[in-house]
Length: 101
Image (cartoon, rainbow, N blue to C red):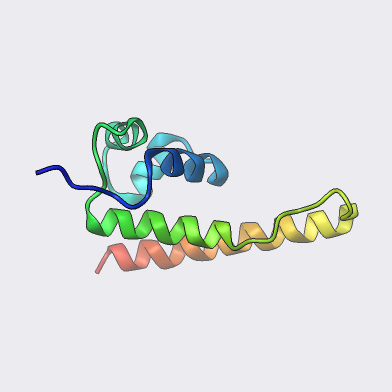
């Protein structure tokens, strides 16, 4: 039976690119083979329930970040970049800990 994922192949690839990660980096984070990530992105395979939950949670966290605008000055953009990097580092720490349980 084919397992359907709520997160789409396009969203998985967009999430990975937004994080600035390679397929191997995302695979290491979720503890799968890099080929598995490629299969998810092409739609030829789907994440299991736990993997899907991790991907959706990462996607939701990124979706809720404020978008920088052209009206922001350099200092505002720099602050947003630092906050975003800190948020992603915290998420990585949290998710790494939860996958080891």
